[in-house]
Length: 249
Ligand code: 8X3
Image 1 (cartoon, protein in one colour):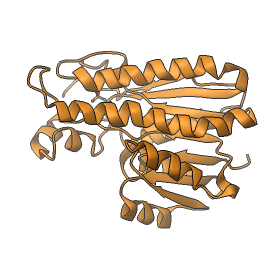
Image 2 (image 1 turned 90 degrees about the vertical axis):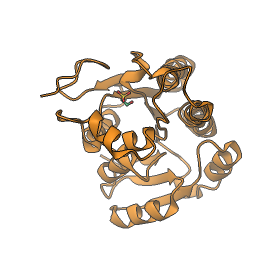
Image 3 (image 1 turned 45 degrees about the horizontal axis):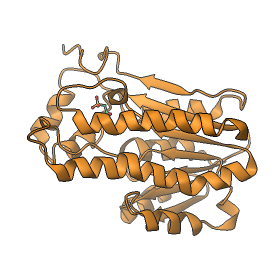
């Protein structure tokens, strides 16, 4: 199969990085985006084939649009957008949570994802082709204690994905979302602000997903025949039944 031009946000770590590593097969051309330039440069040196770096924060609207307009002409026709950037900040009861954490989650998981999509959509609608894969979560289907705004942000991703699929139906664009459960990455360290104990507890006595499990599923979503849209792919560790039922051994 011929390679594709694939843009990945949040590529400097976790699922985004693993996805770049899986998709960097020498045929695909990657545009890896993130806030941490040094990490992106290191990643580029490990990947096969053409890799272009875009160093921006999805929360910065101007920077999103400027960065995407700066993509060289030969890479402009983006075939696949992977909206992976996002995080959880804090896990507290609603009346005790920090409003700055709530802002950060809405700004990256919702507004950032919307900005990047808006910047790339004209490229896809003009060509009548393309694929968008949004990073949802099991938290976008089920609300769990102290999940409040993180869950709200992922419910928003689910609703936006469904809206996009309707609006883009005439444009031959595949609109997809992947919804992971527990994946062991820096996710919990960020959520718990570097508290290793709390972070370790999340994955304690279970066999969680690793970022490559998710990356391989994304690879599958891209490589099914063009007539097929994997609209939603929920991926859970076998030890996890839903957002709250977890089989700790
Ligand atoms: C990450 C999965 O269960 O921590 O989105 O919300 S969970």
